[in-house]
Image (cartoon, rainbow, N blue to C red; front, side, top):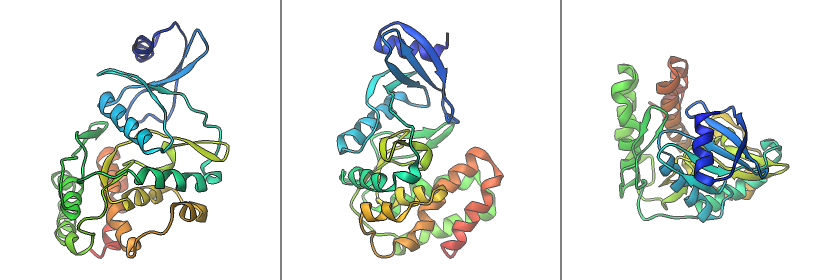
Length: 268
């Protein structure tokens, strides 16, 4: 029997009847377990199950849809299994409302109580009172030693110019932190849950930048989410640059052109 499934079953009790390995876990292992009473649950590991559990609870507290946390240890996280038979293209309106609800939860500073990781890649979340400083130090400059020198110099130049490009103190909104279509579960035409969060408090446009990196939200999304702040289009490249750098470091040089494109879009 799968060791992760057994660890999850031990957290929630009951007799384990069936285990199914789920796809989509490039940075962690994910299984769906079925207990003898017929209840289905999802179990995953990852770099920090307890930190992810705290993030899911924060998302739930905002009123945005997400799976309930049912059990957690240092090695495993057990969450509710949610219906996910729909397609995101039919749920843009629902996602707009869900994202707005998530971002309505506010913090006092930028960051998160704990650091996190995407697989082997650490994500620094140390608190800051100034948003351009947070984005420069926690999201851009941390990559300089791990990228080609030519890219590093351009990133450094952009980071130095952020006080003139980003708002100094936007409302610190609760961010999903990895909001792309693969982390949005849809049941029919509604979002049933936002999963795999990498939460912190920051400018709400960060999630919009991530969502539009690979996906193409329909007009219904923006109608439901509401108007974005003036200048948001100019900031998109800056906010998309961070996930592009993450992909470059995790998955290799095939993403260098994406990083270069966003730097060019930012005028660097």
